[in-house]
Image (tube, rainbow, N blue to C red; front, side):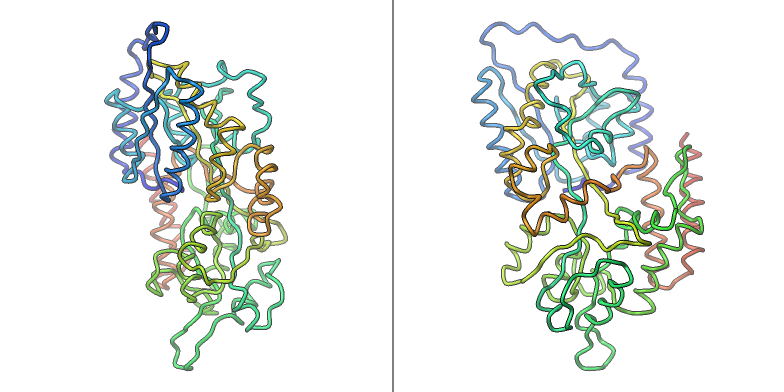
Length: 425
């Protein structure tokens, strides 16, 4: 569900060119004659065929209620944000589009989004949204996007593997998790070739931020520079490296020929993974015989921690049909539209009332994700996060493979990231 990748060159070009473009005159909304049909262009990505089918249904419902507005929906699955940025530069961007919280700070800073505050009325019930999700799309006192849904992370585990290992309940603390992972790691032929790992680890910043924060570390400072190489951050990350290299009770997906953690669990190559709710329909469709369950991510250093990923609908500031664009956003993120959209089960509705009516917060598989919303860290850390993430991921994997000590790898990643950030300012 989350959009991935920013090409640095395009990012720099975007900043320079959009700043020039925005010095020009603002677009005036054309006068629409009574009965005239308006076409609104909507762009997003698709992570599952069901996602497009459900969105198409919501759009048809909207068009039925608004017969003078037609919606042209375009799916962009390859280099989504690069395409959006390029179109913003060329003044051909869609009227409404998806925006990941990860990417939001850059676009909010450069004023390419229409503030939504003046369109929102009391009956829209803005207070119904999870506050932390709204905050991800706020800047300088203005709201630039309405979150369509969100996902947190939870522990998925193979119930049969747990029973075989004599484990009666999922681990609640990281120490219990490490102990269980050892019990779940199986070398059937005793030849050093592990058949089942206790844990399938995702060695990327979007998953390891909770380990950075566990002992008081931070990802960035107030100036937007990376700080993940500090001793407090290393302490949490070292737990991941020690498990992988010392205990040998965890593996990366690439170690076993898988593409992601849930595939490892489905194939029986890992007994536990930390993933989002998008894995639930994936398991049901791809590994229908897998008997799995979910639990909250084990506490690290005594505190509950998870990540939250959210995507909003935003309005192009230069759209010529702002009122129509707002009507679309309001319906898509309103209670009726969101309830229809939430049927997919790939993510959770961002409105509390819809979350309650759908029953996800009481469903044993989804409840750990819903509960995590109250303490999750939003996957967002300013406009420099793409640069920080790229450098972290490259060096952390190197440390995980034993090519260099973790402290050296993180120092190198931090210094390189901060140099790039300094040069781009």
